[in-house]
Amino acid sequence: MTAPIAGSSRLPHTLLDEVPVATVALRGDDVAYANAAAHRLGIVRGTFLVVAELRQSARLVRRDGVHRDVALSLPAVDLSSGRIPVRAELVSLGGDEVGIIIEDQTEAARVEAVRRDFVANVSHEVKTPVGAISLLLEAVKQAQNDPQAVARFLDRIGVETERLAKLVQELLDLSRLQGGEPLPEMTIISVDDLVADVVDRMSPLADAKNIRLVADGEHGLKVLGDTSQLVMALSNLLDNAVAYSAAGTRVTVATKSREGIVDIAVTDEGIGIPQDELGRVFERFYRVDPARSRQTGGTGLGLAIVKHAMNNHGGEVTVWSTLGVGSTFTLRLPVASPPAGTVSS
Image (tube, rainbow, N blue to C red; front, side, top):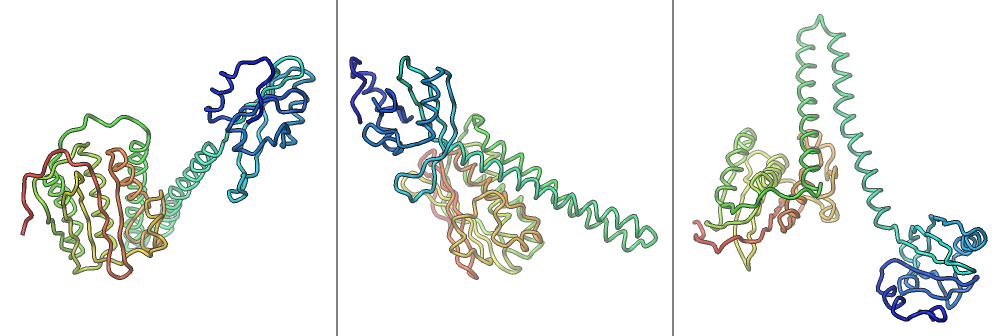
């Protein structure tokens, strides 16, 4: 840190050194003060302000006293992270002194990029079924004298409509989960009841594919949470397990507790996930097999919903998978009370 401006107290400078926003005071073209954050950004070297754009803007502020905002990018100090977007505010401190406050905009830029990607993805995902419905309606008009063709096209319209409705519902679910709204009042939830409810809901889907659903594990476990969100999370895991499993296989929901954590694991004997894609499966709209997702009606939002539901409950979701063997997705939640049951046989 360079020396403070002559005649000033050390206390303000000591305080500014703890502020994460870079702060620089210039006297003429020389740096009279720079806090620790300014040094971390690499914008000062001794008494020299190394960023030409800031030097030029500071001269303009000294000349006319007008406050200026400058957006620019700085090279990362270690040169390994590309460039850092920053926003600088320059103000006259009187005479030939200029103050500069520089905020790192990396997180803001990341959030904006995520927002743009999300909007682009939503637009694409909505456009696909809407476009298909439009084409199918045109086909119905042209085939109105062919009842069999009309019936076939109407069936396809029904499929695309269901796909669009599912997408809209999952977008609404995801928006509520990640919108920062407080959870409804948390209640003690029986894991046995939660699993039984979701297995019962998913049974018709599994039966239609000749897949056996099995619930097993430790009984009497309880967690603190919101029933609707936990039902949604577990239902999405079972829905995926059934969708990506072959007929005649088994999907298991196993429960256990260990060191104050309740695990609810959903294991399938399905196609599995490549190891290099495991880290991305919880991203919005990410699909390991886009063609298979189209066949199953998957939106690419189910696992993102699971992740956000777990975050809201102070828990997490983990995944293990091997290609051709199957996958295990595990909901991990803090236990609400000591287990009261025993392991079922």
